[in-house]
Length: 228
Length: 116
Image 1: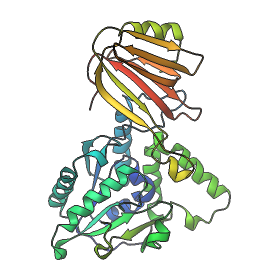
Image 2 (image 1 turned 45 degrees about the horizontal axis):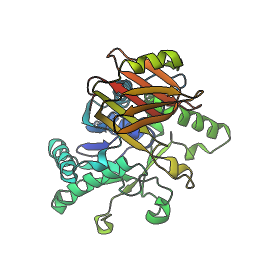
Image 3 (image 1 turned 90 degrees about the horizontal axis):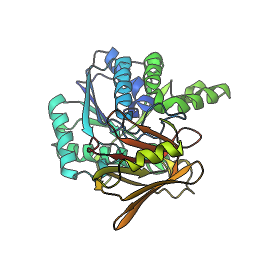
Image 4 (image 1 turned 90 degrees about the vertical axis):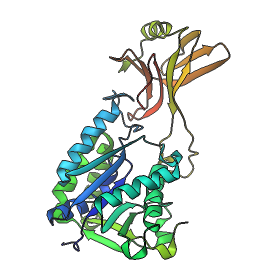
């Protein structure tokens, strides 16, 4: 599948593995089409709980492990503009709201994106996800309408389909399957159990079309149905 | 990290008593607990780089252990500690890992602030 051309794609998520399951195939596809992609990751996932038993990391060494995983994921997707924003895992919703909007405005000013990919506020389960999406959408809402980039928002809370309907953007990313597997494997400290689950679902005869390796789904954010 | 050896951990705890130390204490079900099972009441607590001075630290109970710090006017304790390590920065890291390897509780003591 060839995706529509973009000037620049800006992807903003809070945790090092947030891109892996939902977006890495899309990112790799854009890059292969020659579209520049910036991935801004707000934290280093310092509060990750998967430390193994016996543990392979401590609470204090985990950020370094996850930083290396993030670098490996970026490499697998072909991302050359990876930005680590220096916030701390599980604290984003407690940061000053204006500071967060300012961070997003700087990223937009710097990259001049025609498309932004982030989480759908209130439908993204983790407080950091919702806070990241909130800050980005607030920043874009303040732009003159004609200058606003398109927003693809990721929603996966249990009530998202009920409230928002089906995602309107569906990318067939099968041609970027290897890059996506590479991204998911890069984050192995956090994704091991999800990869197991995926293997099990496939083994149980789930149609491949349902699989993470085939499709990625987004909601085009609609300011006429603003979250606030 | 290695599995708690009570005498060894007790001795390490003793070394931090009666001086100003920074602590990290957290417990959590994970942010997705309610997403996967709406019957879970998701609660947790997190403090980092709070300066305390304890007069007595004690490892108690069978594994998983409880570790309590008695302060002149208060207490800090953690339940479910399974692993410990004195790291290369001289910090005492204690953690409780469940059977699946997820961190359930952490208590850490350091003479210097933890990274932000």
